[in-house]
Image 1 (cartoon, helix red, strand yellow):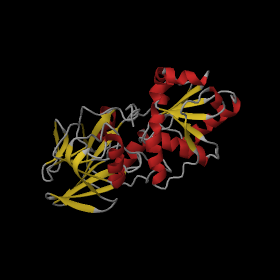
Image 2: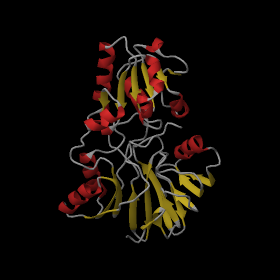
Image 3: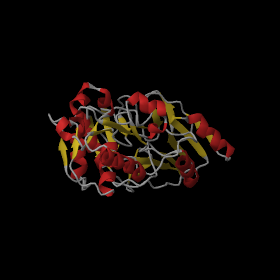
Length: 337
């Protein structure tokens, strides 16, 4: 443990602030890194987060998801107990943040989920110098090296050109991934209407309200085979659901970093795997650790042991946290949002 953080059953706890970071059960005071369900839960007393994360939580859980809330902008700081807390861009999804805890000359950063690839739908990751860095390791194995999202979207568009009489059904998580796929399609010059499963509508509309131009999007509603030759986005679980049958014989695609693993693609029913990840790959995890200048590294939710071993080989103190209650990032299902 450090002087700033200790591991409790509820999650990472800062005694001097009497606050938890991304607790897995309701607590009196929580600092939330982003709106995904395995990090942002309802029922807390007080919640500190970015404005966008708080608004996303309200969309997902209702306005009464906590007793009191406080928004803080990137780079601003607030005093919580004896600790100065500031939030910094994590590049994961809209509103996502790293948490910097500072007191007595010590600086500890909790990364939450993050990525280093360019994403037109959220603020880019910013390395934060610190003494202790708590990093995710969702794709913490050397086999995971993500291609550019533009390259993967190019595969989707090539398939659309080849199979013009088939709907292209793309599985994408409701918060972050769906909107990023749409934005990448627009950047590639695709200007036709993109159709959405109902579970993706509210968060996609919210992204639009934040000034992110996603172009023309419409709800699928009761349409089916008449959408041949079009792109339809849906929660991943719908790819193999009876809902997908309305499109006849669609080309099924899935956007996830896990599409690097063929067994995962088969499990999801994805004929066209798109390796589009909202998490750092192996090279970016290692690069980020070095850029923080931290001497102590804590590794959580993912391939922890491999990244701990890399840290030790590079002269850094490191430990796996083996925390429970967190999903492996891109396998958390948000169909209900």
